[in-house]
Length: 378
Image (cartoon, rainbow, N blue to C red; front, top):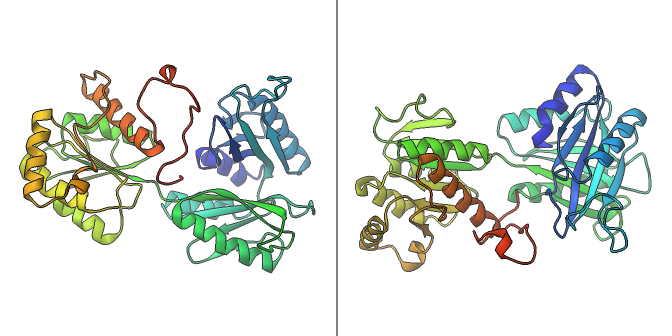
């Protein structure tokens, strides 16, 4: 829902009713992950996507019907061996899509969700997507770290789902959870989709150089909250880095140490060191590589610079295991020349590391195109 939230909230605030389709389960090579959404406005306009085009037409019709009738439905789209184009999903995957009407009456808690996401506060939305009682289908409970708002139909159900949703929220995962009809943990009969909206992951770019501006732009495009840090005030300016949310003038290792101490970095954080200056790089990389929780630590420089950097880091006492976490020279081999091309190669390596991709051309491989997350779900 995050990808269509602005459009959805605008309709909600105007007093209208939108039709919302959300991917809640995927199987095999499904084109979009769980949580991907498409919203149909009262005027028939569309925002978002649930399948990259395969079943958008069918979901559009279902969402329009939902907004007109007020009835939510759970629908499955896939292919069969007998007729591969019967339902339009030609990629070979299977999608479960929940379609619901969204208005002030059906989802009064939506504004709380929008406020939390805008303020980078973790929030989860639990929605009943399957139940024998039609009046329970489509009910929501919004779960924060300390409080919950809304109800799924009974105190017992709310208690169980809120506890489980907080567990998913803590790990940044979204999932369908199955319960008995009244929230019994070992039962069956009710499915609840929990969509977790953790704060955006961070990208920390050290070194206020021209390459950093291009990397910051790529990071923002990928959904990271980007910070550029450099000790040189003349270079670290917001005018030079318009894609960065924060531009900080400080010694890199000192800034990173403060962020670690404050708990503002996590296992999704990526660190890009672009200065290739030992007086900045070595204390910074020593700190970053000793911290076990980063998703990616990469450093720019030639192979000769890399060898010198590794020698210096060994002199600082870093182990082979800690050094193995360093990606240097940073980026995939794309033959990049310009700062923009180099930034694409760096972004490509970060994406490949996140999802377990090989970096090889898809045409040269076999098997599934889409990878499951190696370290975490988002």
